[in-house]
Image (tube, rainbow, N blue to C red):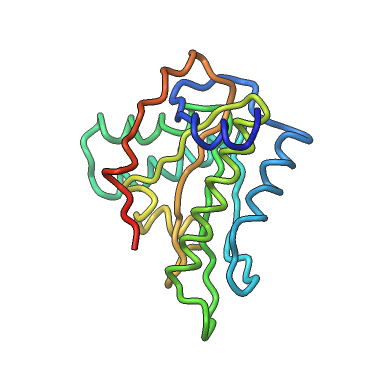
Length: 182
């Protein structure tokens, strides 16, 4: 798949099965994440890869967050099950650093670019994925579990695996609605 096709035809696929990327494919994904735009070469990211028992640990963290809010049983169950929507979840964390020329927001965006680069690398290698954030990324129980404090943020949960369906066509978007020129 050439780069332009990858970037213009990408779709999030929410139905993912095993296998997840491993070995060289996973190494390529992580390497792609590490090449995200990074003003000041701060590498303001951390990637936590959850598979197997790691998914169980993530499930327990999300369940604990839902229970701490005294959520209804259906919400607790949904939070508990969410890591199992794919055989791998990569938690992408912005680990910010104080810098005179690189504001925190740039570091958050850089971590987001890392998430997208990993997703694109997965697709380029025949895997698929989808990126979710949602309220659990900001929940104090989840933040504490991943040692996220201060300006650091969980920028997303990148679910990755083998597609269980054929993606629908990509909707055409009129650039005139979103682009202006000076």
